[in-house]
Image 1 (tube, rainbow, N blue to C red):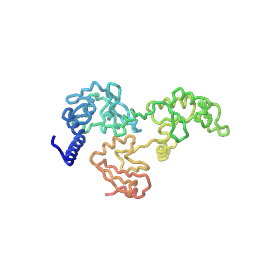
Image 2 (image 1 turned 135 degrees about the vertical axis):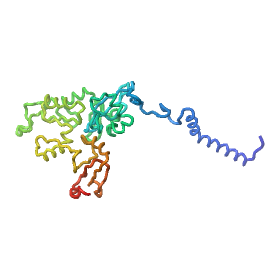
Image 3 (image 1 turned 90 degrees about the horizontal axis):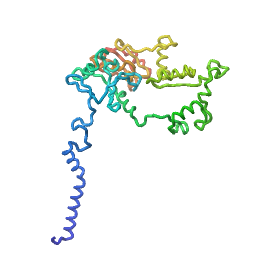
Image 4 (image 1 turned 180 degrees about the horizontal axis):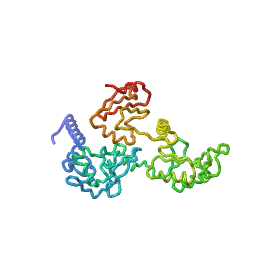
Length: 353
């Protein structure tokens, strides 16, 4: 090798170092390029080069309905909210729900529900192709996300007992046997003093307060509540009302819908039965929503939302916007006045040319 001066050595070193640095910086780029040529993708290899990891279709419907033998379709009811639309769940061979969609037979999932006498295969065929533009049955975003709650790692599958002060958020898992023991027998369960169990308050012949007999027996000290009704409501009612003897059973409508039902009862002049009123969406000319919105989930409203996409017009005066203003939509010819605060102008201006 020819003799190099110090300056030349520095130049060669800088050039070699630059080339090495350049090569290292583009190492990942080169690897992705090679992977792309060999595997069809530079990222994680998918199940299909075109469709990626999309779910395998539930069936083929080119000529007629051909059910995927690795999947089952189960028609059921959605408990994502209390509209309780009909849904269809796709279940794989391992019994796992892989997708949730609408039930074409159900009036809350389909503007023109399919007659129950139509065979399943024929009904499903109508969801595909050109007919699917009108007959498509879907689930809302809340219903579709039931999968997340069903398989959420945060879902509670065991009893949880508070071990800290109220509001500290400290809990521990306990067995069902411990749960039954503590609920029935009571005791110093939280380190805050004695708590009576069900055995202590099950006294149907002993009044809570002899001076106030209207309070009823001690059994009324048990309050049983149920947030939803997935088949447990009847069992809990039988236990609380018939078996234990408490009159204090509260379900969804006992606290969530009580104000609405009481208002309906006052409007109809029957506070004993509190008749449950609903809007006549097909014929209403003016609807006033107080403390809510027509966009909120409501029983029998989802099908109407779908029909509002038909030609027509609805004019909405929404007092919850600042300032209150009109909004126009291509909807059924009804007028909705929405808002959660009093606005006399809305009442005066609900009709205009």
